[in-house]
Length: 386
Image (cartoon, rainbow, N blue to C red; front, side, top):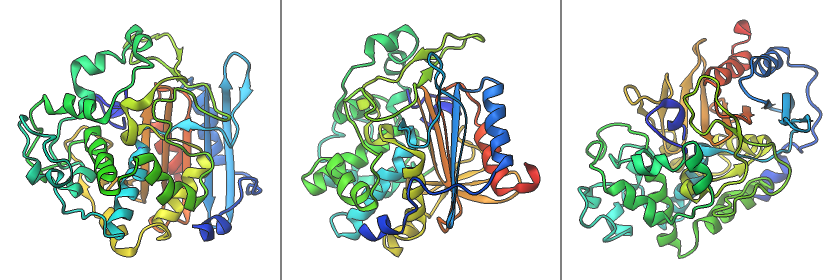
C-alpha cells in the first residue's frame, strides 16, 4: 500500500536531451567514500537486503551499491536494475499535466468539474471549487483512498496475497475516496492524497482523448530516452533486470516475516505511484526537468511554487510544489526532487535546483527509516557531516 496515516506510507511518484545525457556505461569518478560508507552501514544494520545510489554531477557519474538483489542466490545489486518508484511517480504525472498546459490543452485553474462532470455528484465535495493546481500541490482537501480502512486492510499481511493481482479502475479508487468527508476546504492546507493524482491523470485522458500511459510516453519517456521507465498498469511483472522487492507487508511485529512482493498489480496506485524506473533514468528525468529542458519556463515556475507541509505528518523540513518537493538537509542545503515507497521498494531522488547535481537511491526492502536517505544526501551535499 502506498499510503496510510504514517509518514512512511505517505510517501506512498527530446532527441537533444538523449544526445547530451551521460551514457549508462559512463566511467564513475574514482571513489565516493562518504556515500559508500552509508550504503555499507545500511546493509550491515539489516535496513535492507540491498541498496544502490547513482550520482550525477555535471560530467561526473558515480554508482555505488551494497548488499544483494536476491537473498536466495546472493546476486549483487546492479546499475540498470528496474524497480517500483512509488510516489516519485507523481513528478512524472505533474510533468505530463504541465506539458498539456503549455500546449494549451488545459489550465491549472480549470476545475475538476469542468473535465470530470458528474463524477462528484452525491458526495460532500464541490468539484466546481477544486482546481487542477490544488490536485497537484495536494491542497484539494480530497480524502486519500488509501486511508480507507477496508481498502488498506486488503494490503496487510495475508490479505495482500489474496488481493495482490486485483485490478482497480481510476473511477473505483475515486469512489472510495468520495465516500469520506473532505480533509479541508480547497486550497486551505497540504494534505497528502493519492486521489489527487488519480484525478489528474483522468483529466489528462479527458483533455487528450488518449490514455494516460500514451501521454506519459509522448511527453516524457520517449523524448528523454528513458528506456528503463514504464507504467505497467495491471501487469504484475517487472520487465527486465530487477531486484527482488522484499516486504514486511505492514507487519508491526518487532521480528517480522519478510516476503517476496515483486509481482503485484499496481493499478491501485496507477499515476499516483505505479511507475517502474531505474536510478539512471530518474537522474536523467529530474536533471532535465529541473534544468529547464522539459517544461517551458512558465510551467516550471508553477511546478516549483511550493506550499508548507508542516503539521501534515509528512516528510519533515519540506515544502511541496506540483509533484515535486524541496527539502532542507541538516546542514542547511536545500535539495529538490521526489521520493516513493511501495511494497518492497524505497526510492529517493533529490538534487540541486538547477538539475546539475543529482542523487538517486533505492533499497529493495520496505522497513527502513527515512534517515538512511538523509544520510546519503548529507554525505554527498554536506561533506563535513560524512
